[in-house]
Length: 545
Figure 1 (tube, rainbow, N blue to C red):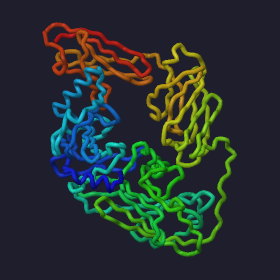
Figure 2: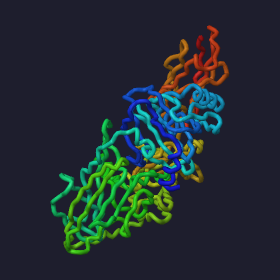
Figure 3: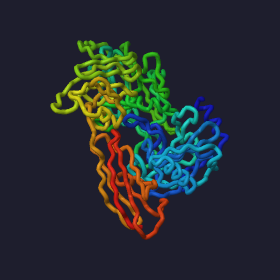
Figure 4: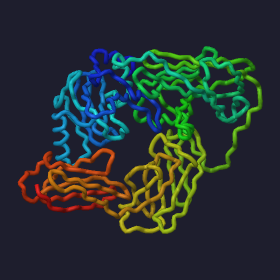
């Protein structure tokens, strides 16, 4: 379904604001971030928890989640016209939804919940109260994160396509700088073959720039809104050369599976160093993002005539607020440094399956995991006495578009191979189930710049009691190996729900909220905490209630 068709279908619906006060945004849809686009809008809640949240249109609650995907507590509402709205980082659900979640958690004996509902289970109307805002999940401050998805494909859509009437914005975006990217071996800019940045001191630069051969460009720009503090992403960008469009983008629909392509469209290396995103106005050969469009040269400008070329950037937001920035480049014939020839055997092709083998490790990169061909620099570091040596494959961070397969050979035998796992530096892996076979451990990775080792975890988690009195049971739980997978509590042999406190390693159970009779006598508590390698710790105690 095209965006235009989708909006026409959605027009049959009545859309309302998700909050009952003026809508102010802390973040907008499509804003580039490391490894993902911002998939929705961040609605300000006055830095407070507990603001009412309303369904933006008629539909039904189709899903409720707790502790999944960084969303914290989330509600999904499916609407007519093929749309699903998602309300994230919530503090609480309305009582009926809370009861459904609680029923699921007790049935599955699990705090982390993924509740799927039928259309008749909980229908809602536009403006119906469904939850209160919070700060749960991967949220750094209280706010409501609202997403709009294509129900059939799961593609992320811009909520402002249907909600912009509730937002005031007459402020056009602002561009700060442009970057020139000479194509290696085929172009130079200002006499150099490396990338260079130049500030927009005005909307019309009078400085004379020179170039020869093929050069790509990128732009650092942000959008701004009245009553909204912070820098937002750009909805539409166009680059023309002498009036001809060489690049355009409209961030209107992003398939979730292509989220990590943001690292190719944006200058990821520059962002890692400076915290600033330059968005390229050309496409690397492996970039398949549907929101960017280029001419036959993939957006590269071919300065092949000795004359002046006029370049115009046009940036605009969803409200049509627009700015233009112009500069001229004089084509001047000059030497172009030849492309560096590599003698390395570790050239990975973006359009092929790549298999890298070094002593003690193997890496398999499937087709379409790279933005372009790259040269790996594999390195093995000895770890005497450890389960395996350490392996790196690239000199800096390089996120892959998908999961690659890594296999590492063990230095020594272990008692229980099921307790082996692959660990990556700076959180590049998390815990992924691994397979052991004939002294090798195979798992998944998607960051070439991290270092990888095999670790062995036969140590159970640690349970530190805090409060075991009155109507509150509270514990701190830790694991220094593979990480905690689950925690379960039982009182007098029956399951009771422990909830995890946000942004902490504390779990607690309020006895007034669980099926335990208050007798004034003693009850028996058993708490079991299990890590990802199957090691369990149990804590048993008696308490009066």
